[in-house]
Length: 299
Image (cartoon, rainbow, N blue to C red):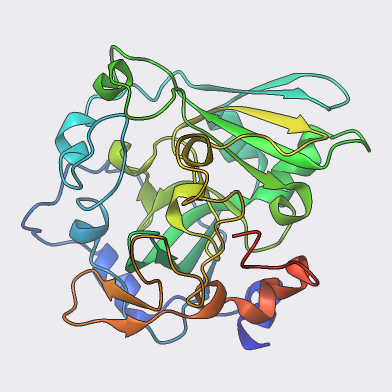
């Protein structure tokens, strides 16, 4: 399994196009990016020879409903989000409750750049060089109890900064969850940056989840709390529309959304559509997590 071997060994360099893109240059809609670069210990390409989505597209076309339901509005509306100081608390079924300052977390673990395919449930996609550390390493640091089977995540709740939290479009704060074995999978990432720099606010600064084999709404942004559970936690979209957004949310071209097909996707920055890959192209790496599970029932 070529991609898996690359991740395990950490020996694949990012494509030349990534390094060239990081050197910058004018961008039509490029928001301000912190000038500091993250200290990246290794780079791994897990998107094959696919073209990296330009930064100006990945940072200007995003869902962040705490700020707006329009794709491009969060770039402006989130730009003043205060991301320091920022504390991530850990509770639930752990040996003891914990609290981490986000910069402490960044120092705790070697930082990696991982180029992943990225697929939205709305049938658009990108290829993004995320920067972060394995979620499994963080889970280990949290020391969950043997009874823990799931892990939940909570986004910042601050209606003064996040104006749409004054609206009823979703139950706030935004919450998501994973099975603990999913969270421990080597592909699961806690991201603190993208394209070599810290995350822009609209992309989930200062800390977000990246689960590349699942639809994007599972990869919760601006995390402030992590909770370990013995039972499956609720997730925001499953609360609102359980018939449309399941807990697992694995990318599956064979299971349509009730209102549209998932068989094809529109790659942002390109014309036309392309076939969607099972588990977003990470079938070999993750299919063992779901052996015997009915993926139509547990969508």
